[in-house]
Image (cartoon, rainbow over all chains, first blue to last red; front, top):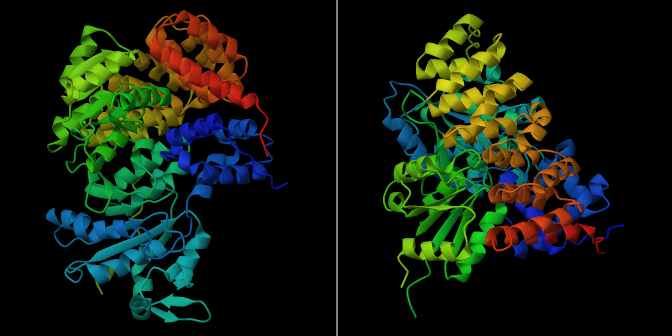
Length: 283
Length: 128
Length: 208
């Protein structure tokens, strides 16, 4: 019990080839020990007696094992200003670009989906208020959506613990939150009430269509977990939910290369993002 | 001693092909990057340039010709990166399609190590 | 405060009636054909309409939507409409077809033996990739069956590539015979060796 299953070099390579193909995650030989530890955890959790047995069930994604394994490799905590480089890209490049298109008084619309307990959409709001010089000249609409109504309730409550705020400077916390008990801060009502939270299943076009078109969508760490068919449908739904020329950002270790060819790849100083082509025909 | 090693990116969805090309070209003095398909290759190329692309045709999400056409539409210098198509097909229509997509050369799989190293050197301009 | 909140999204527009979906798929603008392709799974004879559209659709994104919808329908009929494009001269269509088939594992399964035995080497080659979707034992068995009598180097290479992931001990003698057939072809010798090494490594009990 508690024995570490050590992977042979061939087993490690076989696993790496599989993970790279499925998810785009690449592990060098230097990471072998790190990978082995997580494999050992999953083998124990699934009751697989050998790596060969575990790999057989991983390959055909028994009970969502691919997702569980990938989760073991990624930091799943959500917190404010996670992936700050995407927020920088938002103000430095994406919004600027979206404003070049004639807008006739339309709001800039940003969708955070899945929004989980709200850190991401509230982060976007705070970031814009703090970092975008033109923030008072335009209307900004931020929508946070998730399939899980439980996390949506938490998001609406606007209550966060110390860990969620760890990347924010004390000045920012002071400015936008009020202490609300031991290890709880509540985001200011102005901000809390300005973000709309709603339930959505991104695989259902009838659920995504009513949202209309967004300028920027943040869709992190969810697409890569769907099966092939659902991934494509969700990608098409998100494509439709973008205004022509709009942008979608994925999670740090995700790539459209494992999802769909619908979007154009764009590189900006701070991030790689994906764009729906600007012309209205889908060329 | 000489100029910096030339950088090659192999774009192929077969892990063993990528490994074969990597071993062969590293031994011949090249640095090698990899990508599984055209979309991933584009993401990497937008971050750092290479001296040569070795591109398969049949890959998930984005085939090699569509990828090359997309590369040729990018800004310079990326757009003019030399590209070698490696394909299982050997017909005149396939050569024509490769040329139309912007390939500089075409090798029919399976490719020998000698040919791979030789044509990489020619297309990177390092052949003596 | 520049942040604004709209009270709710506008209601979803009712899906078009089947007749207009099918008509738009054949005759509409790019946007209309895109929307129709996405709506087609809800229409009767949707697979057939999608299949017909696939033969003539030039817009790459609409094509993608057609393939996705066929995969959503996921019946034997869908498979039949997609299969011919595996043989296409157009690399984009071949890729689209293969990706769509990958997304309908269950519907494709009954066709696999036939595809792996197809007269066209290119089809056999792509079919090896489809075998990757099977549980390891099944995939290994099917690919071993192909490999033992396959004379085309690239088809063998495709089978060996997948066997590197799924191969069982029964593959070892077949791989050895294949290496004999292709002695002197560096890439095949290379990939057979790696695949055989990986299969043999499985037989060793885990340490620790």
